[in-house]
Image (tube, rainbow, N blue to C red):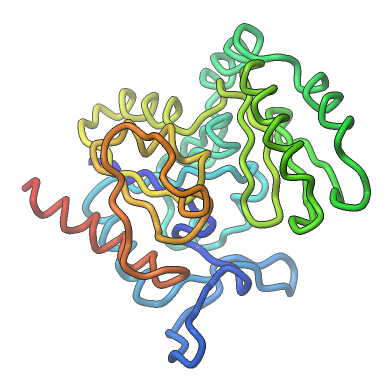
Length: 271
């Protein structure tokens, strides 16, 4: 069995994304990611213990839109719960015992050449609606996709919807997660990378978790799919999806515990 899970706002949380109810007791938690002296991401102590049980019983597979470098900032997965495989760059890169899988990189390069408009062209189209009033910065991730830090309240939503439809025809997807606006080729997706690892490792069952539209390709095809009740998938209402996606009862950082308990229950039922 594989547990393939998104990380940010699914298993790990920043202070801003914790969504703790006003007046509730703050759960015991610890830092799982630092950059210099700055604390970035947290998990509850209970979630960490549950994840250790998951990793002991099955393959724990982190599946993140983070770049390779950004993934390596998460010390929990470098020093304590060290996965044999990790998917980064939204499926564009696979790490095998910490090293990039070059075979997968070659496959992705061919897919991009055949299935998606050049990324520079996408950015040219985006420049027609972008300005400094709502786009603070633009970045390219591992030479695979692009993202911007934006001011959501100032963004031209109607124009963004039109832009989303335009790039969809060119082999790209748009996703808005908090203050980050992503443009990602459809050829670079989480499920294709998970399926590659599933075949390589000769596994049969995949449970998956994620909170955003970029997680949908993985959630729709997994044998068991879970999403927190917060995040982009909740914000867009009920997108047309294949299969059943189960929801957590808790939101924010506490949702990670719900997810991990569900995965352990599914594992127990399959014994």
